Amino acid sequence: MQTNVLNAAMKYGLIMGIVFSVNFLLSVSGNAIITLLGYLVVAFIFVLTYRFAVAYRDKENGGSISFGHAFFFIILLFLFAAIISSLFKFIYFKYLNVNYLPMLLEQSVSMMQQLQEQFHLSIPDDYYETMDKMMSPTAFTLQYIWVNTFLGVIMGLIIAPFVKKDKDIFNNPEN
Image 1 (cartoon, one colour):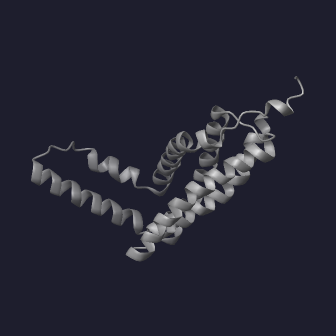
Image 2 (cartoon, helix red, strand yellow):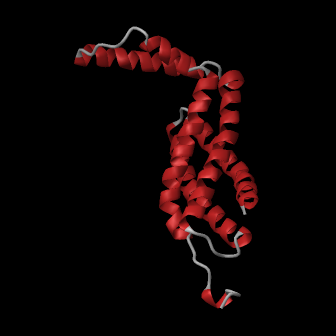
Image 3 (cartoon, one colour):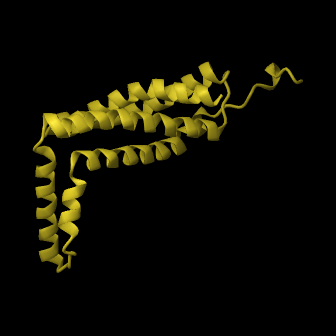
């Protein structure tokens, strides 16, 4: 059973990773209308997660699945999707749009300086150096893996109860 969940999560995670990558591209486009399409992709991710979990339940598990098993599958699904999309993000940040992260860092520093002036905050000296390290393509994409996996936990808590299905007592050979 463990092999089935890994194989299914990898197979569906590849598709979901492509959808995550499309959503990322829409979000960094800079065009407000295209960015709004990203919200439709997020809704599509909800639907796709449900459909993949039901397909896993019906094809790999004989039509029944516990809440915990469905939850575990969804977390794995998001983990594999996050890995796939993070590879795409790394390529994007490292080779396709090398100015994106430095520009994001500059905007973040500017915003922190404004907040510091406005609210008289004291910011540690090494804060900007730490932010600079976090804005490297490698560090930034690794953060995305954990963020997307955490979103998988939240999605799993929402979707797993709807996917959960007990075994049919009439088809149980033990009776």
